[in-house]
Image (cartoon, rainbow, N blue to C red):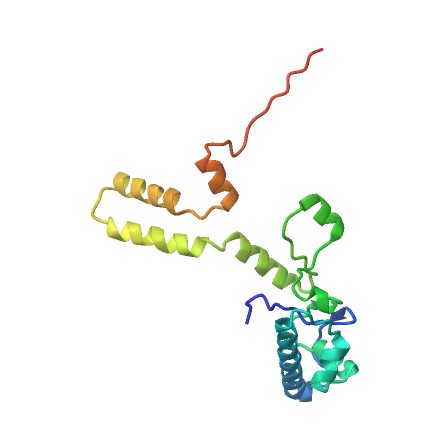
Length: 193
């Protein structure tokens, strides 16, 4: 199972997920959703193994014995914050959400998602900005512990060296550093008046 939940589920409609209206039967609806999604995912997996398959969502649902109306109804159920399930054809199950206008400018990977919960947005931004800091913090604490008998100046040098030598960087930055290229360059334009 992919941790990013690929292949994505096909849908003939864009859906905003919400908790079921019948709160007393939430366990039933969530269990029904899980079983239908599992059945559809397994059928998609069989279809993916057949390279020449041209199955549609209707074919998948028919093979699973699921009515389209019920499938879309259970896709819209969640017990957590709302999400958007994009309209997605069978040929797009492995494609990230993207914006064609941004893609023409960016020309790189993107996974655009709608913001449905302010708190979840903040948590995502903070965790993204700090994702490498946990391991670095633990490593620096270990260096301080190992060198606790050294004088403060020596400790600081070792902590700084550890930070510089173990900092996570992107592949692009690594290539620039290995090739001794400028990471940034101050360019002053001279004006001939």
